[in-house]
Structures are given as C-alpha cells and as structure tokens.
Image (tube, rainbow, N blue to C red; front, side, top):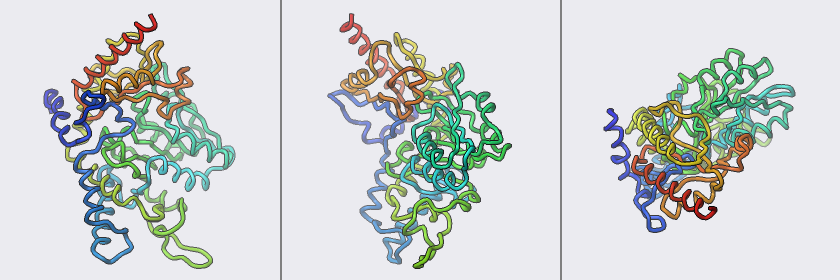
Length: 420
C-alpha cells in the first residue's frame, strides 16, 4: 500500500466500531487509550451475541446440537489463533482468562517444579506487574533469584546488559516484547537465541505486540508467549498461552477440576491431553469464539498493513508532540518514518499531574490514560509517580492526533495561566 492508501485505513475501518461514534461531554469521542484496551468491531460483537442467542451450551460435554455447535466454534477459535501466530500445532494454544493468568500458569506449573535455590530468573525493569509479581512469588517459594535488565541511555532494552546477566545459573528469561510505557520494541529474537544457547527457557509477554504487528512463534522460537484478547479487538475475560508442545506436555496441570482430566478415581486422577490439560472448568466459551472473530477481522485487514499504518501514525504523533512545551516523553525516539517504536507515548508535563491532564482532556472528549500503567518500578527509576499516556490503534486518524495535541496545548495553557 502507498502512504496515501495507508492513511485511509482508519477511515475505512471506523464504520466497524460503533463505540467510536459517540459524544463525551458534548464532544466527539477521540479514543486514545488502546494500550489499556482496544475497541471491538461489529464482527466480534455479532459473534458474541450469536453464541448466546443461538448456540449457548457447554462445550465438549454434550451430544445435542447446541453443544456440538458451541464446541466446533470454540475449538475453531483455537485453530484461528494457532494459525494467526503460526503455532506448530493447535495443541500449543491454551485458552486463559488473560495474559496474567497465562503467566501465572507457567510460573506455578513450570516454575515451581523446575526452579531451585540459587537459580536465576532474568526479566527487565520495564515489565508490567503481571510479569513481575508472579515471579517474585515463585522466587520466594523456590529460593530462586530475580535479576533485572537495565535501560540504555535511550531508555530502551539494554541488550549488552542482558548479556552480562545471562549465566549458567539462569534458568528462565521472561520479558515484554513491546513496553506499554516506553513504547520500545525489544530485541526478543536475539534474546531468545542467546538464551537457548545456554539452555535457558524464554517467555514473551506479547500483549502490546500481537495486536499491532505480525507474530510468528516458530520464527521467534520462544518457549512460551502470552496475550490478552481485549487488547486485540476481542472481548475481555479471555486470552491465551502459547507453549511449545513438548514443554507443555512435561508441565503438570495448573488447576484441577472438570475438563482437564482423563479419568478420576477415589485415590487419584489422570490428566487429559493438551490443550485441555490446562483448561480446567467451563471456559469463557462465547469470549473465546469472539476472540476467534477478532483474529479473523485482523487477518482480513492484514497485520502487515496495520503495522505499516501505525508506523506512520507514530511518526506523525511524535512530530506533533515535539510542538508541546515542557513535555517529557519516556522511551526512545522513533525514526523519522516511525520505525523502532510502538504507537504510544507516555509523558509528563512539567508542573502538571498526569491525572489532571487526562481529566481535562476527557472533558474535551479525548480519552487518554494516566497513572503508573502497571509499571511502578519503572516509574520509580524515573522519579515519577506516574505519567499520562496516549496510545493509538489502526482505527485512529491523523485528525484525532491533531485534536489531541491541540487540546493538550490548551490544557497546558490553562494550567500555566492559573499557576502564573
């Protein structure tokens, strides 16, 4: 696609997102909080509604028509996700409630059974709390030690620092692909290659990458990868864990109960086969089916086209933010064509609290996020209690960026006049 065609992508798809066509405080909505959650196209809403109106039944447990249809749609969604990330087998895709549960699954199933005192876990200072806290809990229980990859002077992942931390004691590397605060795209392929040379397992948090760029888990060669449906045009309450089949087969169940068993006796049980071994209880059936519809929707557009368009949006966003006085943007600068960084910017304005900024922007119909973005340790490194964050998706437009920056400047002027 040419640059002119790319700019029309948002215009073409916006009709598919009913929520975008509303007013907030009497102003047309500009939704720029996509790193927190994405909006849902009609195709996803219809899939969820269709399940509950036409096929609502439990999966895998009935011979009647509704159960058969529900099971086919649920397992069909698994097939779609496996193809979307190029998994080697559908058995490598485990449905979870979200990426947080997926990380905890690996932590408690693999971590508790493979880590011992003195073993080392490497993560980074930029991680989401969901990739901090479970490993801190596991380290406390196993005696393992956590080490943190620092930032470079450009405020992105320090690959040389990672190399210095990697040792014969390292048993796990668990890092984010794209930072939800710094916007940096981490060199996960190189990290995985270096780790595997030492026999170290690698988990990738792909929550901020899977919605925005093509992902091939076989090419990446990660051992596990996690994602949340609600960030990729799907509903909340569903996500998935990808894991290499041999590794998943060697891991014990995370939760016990129905569905994950083969047989149950008074003195024990036998596990079911993958992927059901890790899907105890009735799953989020409708949500999983709707996530499959989201994957269909993204696939039809083309992840390469989404990525290319968002690079252009990123370049434009940063050009416009350069006009804003006293702004401090965290993370590396993108190249002039927007490459090397995700379409988000966490920032602070000198003398103005991020929550005040976001509140006043909301009164103008512009939705951004403020807070620590579940990266408190990272904000402490910057001596900041939090930050404001603008994050884009493929349905956002250049005009929305213009309006955001205009309102941001007006808000800064408002505070300056009050404090002056």
